[in-house]
Image (cartoon, rainbow, N blue to C red; front, side, top):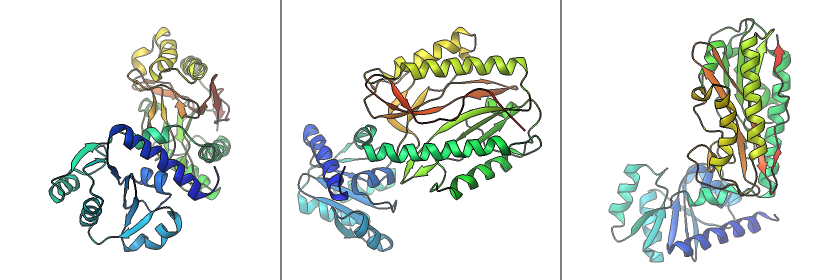
Length: 363
């Protein structure tokens, strides 16, 4: 995209066009992902105010030097009291209608802002910046692709590491150590290692349970590169799978393939979700697939838009990045989930997760 300043200016221009279209005088935001996207600042704590004529980044003493280096396109204000600093800027710029992050801003802080600026018409931005973030730029996709490659490398390592008798916690620790030691900035989210009956919990936490012969093990994890996340799930079996495990696995694999084939620009998230969901329903397991088919991934691990679910109203566009992750979860027995990370194209999708998807034996 060019220099940091060129990137910042292009993003600011898109944001200002959205302000004009909505007849807002300015927008104030504090979420770390939005701050990083719009300003380049990675400190995680601060605020930004963008109006038609100015862009201001507010930080406290801890982040002044970092903000100067990372956000050269922004006027920097060091604050002692953020509400007072925001008030001074909004009054000075004579802003009347200002958008804020209703889904992120704490209620108490918002109430203080209302009290400090009673003349301002505060409006919820309703995910405006998230919508701008949804379509990824080439360097964003490159970072996500590198994160996905790290996850593939980690899965290949786990295939030779996992053994019967290990605990879920031991495997999670090995996974996260491997990711960090091979260049990941951290983990995309607390890694899921769910064995045997714990696999019936879509967001299970690794615990002290020891793997046993015949267990299915759900492994859901991701890496982080330049602030961008990856997300991948594979389900493996310890030593030998029984017939039910093989059957359920093949149903989920078929559903995942149907979902991948349904992804393309112009399709609704609801329509893509339906393609995979009907495969599981037709096999008699519809009630055991209770979550959406996928979600957006970028600076946050869960971004919306895009979203693939029965209630998703948004439409996919070229260069959105989304997961495709159907699953079947049977209480008391276990579960299977298979997840790939993909980039939406005009005619389909480009898969970023390259780990094999046959039912792999470990241990």
